[in-house]
Image (cartoon, rainbow, N blue to C red; front, side, top):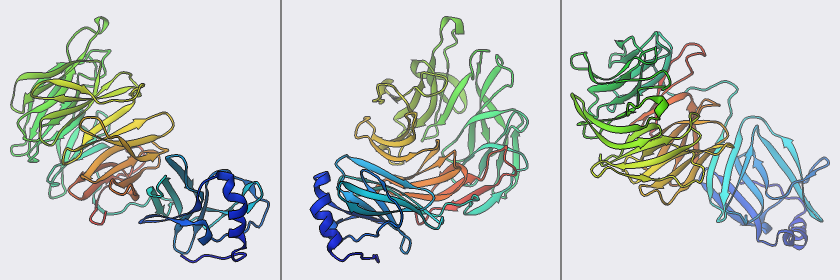
Length: 455
């Protein structure tokens, strides 16, 4: 990395003689690039003087090198566990040392990229993004479909051969995109909570009535004969939002897990249960009961456990992560916060880890923990709302920043973040990312697919 030298060794000597004791810790430069961070002793750093009246900034200082797009964090080794710097659009801090501390001014650079990074006490980059912010969205990959009706969401089959299409509202129902790229209608009634069978030959879904208090049906569509079979019926009350909650097909394909109400009148209090049923119908088998409300239902890869969210408030700001052992019906609370707020848990492909979303009122963060609810660590943080968390493999995840409409990838081994594309509704099958380019109320939609081979 090329550096401008001002004052030879004079400025480093002044920094050592005057400024270092201001923080009483080892000074230096964290030099960041896409591979990580390197700590350099202060004597190797050089500085550029400000050209206008600077302002005092306490703590850590940042400078961007526009030639090789590296990031320098100037200061001392952080005493706290972690700090975060974000520059958007690109600016640089021009800095020098005077008696009493650092003096800093901001100067605009070419607005062609921004830097986001965080560093722990060892000088290791936990998060780093070096990318060009776009005035207009940039959709990468291949367009595979332009739907003829507005979509609320999509769900790709495990083999990637078909894509289930959820229409927006009650007018467009449920369809699928076949291998030839043609759209086939399954039903005109509003549907939700889609779950594919492991072999991709069947699709479970909830058929929802527009009027509350009517029957809701848990259905299975067979691609072999094109028929819809109702395997369970329940009823929503005018006070209850839905009769069924989430639906999830087991990894061995033999059972479907779902949540529904116990049937108590709303005025007397009601609870929700998690039950299993055969894809052919028959008698349900409850595996856990007495939940306030549930959202999200996820099987472990070995089929031995179920993850759920027990929702304690309609806004979903208070939610508990619970794990159900199917064989014993034992329920374990994995939530650690005094005020619960952990959402959308899902197992890694090898079943060793659980990823989940945490909302603290300031930012959305993604966390990992093991199957016992221990060894928690944060792996991503966004100022916008995070949605659509997907596992690529045991060491990579993809998620959507819903506010900026961007899809972000995270390497869980290095902690590095990577911008993938603009888009919404991420689905990952193998190493292919499927997504929508825009919401239904924002013009013509397209479905894209993007290879993640180099991710």
